[in-house]
Length: 155
Image (tube, rainbow, N blue to C red):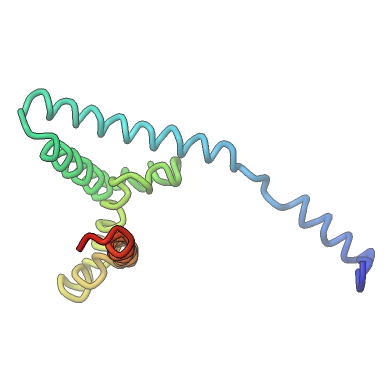
């Protein structure tokens, strides 16, 4: 209780006004939306996976790669026609976390900076959002791999 200051009437009035005008938190509804939309994207991915496994006669690793490619294509296409941004506005993190969000993070800057040319616009900005995620993800996996090798003695 040392140096505890009592707020003045003016500060209390200001805080009351801030609390009246501050938008209410929508955390619960946003979490539910993210959960549902992420689940729907994952269910679509599982349907693609099962369809490919039953009809294409691929190995499990090829089916997984095929599923990822199809989901990236769907995400990129929906971004290109302007639908994925609307999905993202409603779904929040539920549309960002799956691999379709990765496609969106690459296609959006590419579309935005295309007018600046293919090299300095599209090429330079292609990984402006996804690039740092890739760099830190790959770096972390290399570090964890090295630590695992040192601990287990496998080289």
